Amino acid sequence: MAVSQRTSLYVERLEERCQPAGTVTVLQSGSIVRLVGDAANNDVALTATGANALTVTGIATTISGPTTLAGVTRVYLELADGNDSAAVTATVPFDGQIIARASSGNDTFSIGNGQYNGSIVILEEHGDDVVSLAAAGYNEAVIVRTGSGQDSVSALNSVWARRFEISTSRGADTVNLSFCNFADRVVIHTDDDNDLLSLANCAFATFSLFDLGTGHDQAVLNTVTFPTGKPRSVLLGGLGVDTITQTGVTGDRVVRGFYP
Image (cartoon, rainbow, N blue to C red):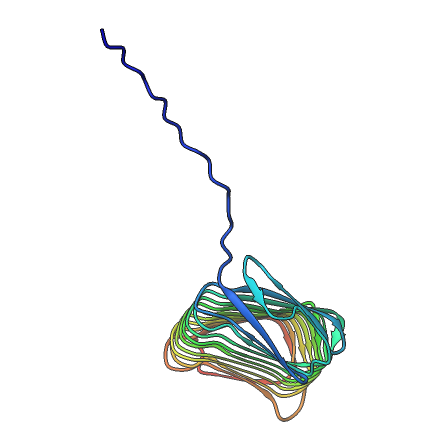
């Protein structure tokens, strides 16, 4: 009589491995530093450790190259395609210039929490992008340009010594300035689609321009101080049914193109 043997089967548990979201390559040539991303979803953090010194950290992202940098006068953040994120902090004041560029994807740039003595330029392309400038002193010009998509640009709890410019492209964009003091000119332009401009608890020391472009746009101003005299600051609606709400707003200004 044949005796059958039963074979027990089991599944072996494999080692858990976290796969980093792409690679960012750090290149330094003299005082110029470039962080170059790939097509994956890169996430990096830069921390100022001195007037011209930085550390680079990858958040579930591989960093290829040096992570401790000295003698830096300009930083290029070139994160390419993918849904990328970059955060810069400068609790130790940073003197270098920052130029952040990203390609297609839903990207997030945060530059704040400290003091910046060099200019900042942020250039975005297609995607629903988020730019945050918060809790900082910006002592040189800051320029933000976003591409098509539903973008959000915010400036919060900060002091601005030089000019501040924001330009958004097609898409239902939101621009929020809150608890900020601006010593120099502010220029904000939103393009096509239904955009929202929110100004709250802000003081503008000189002429500023807010142009909402085409679309059914909305401007909400709450506790805002504009300078008196000429030239007067200007708020412009465009083609579309634009509305404006002003509460606790003082100073001289020209308002055109809003309904009613």
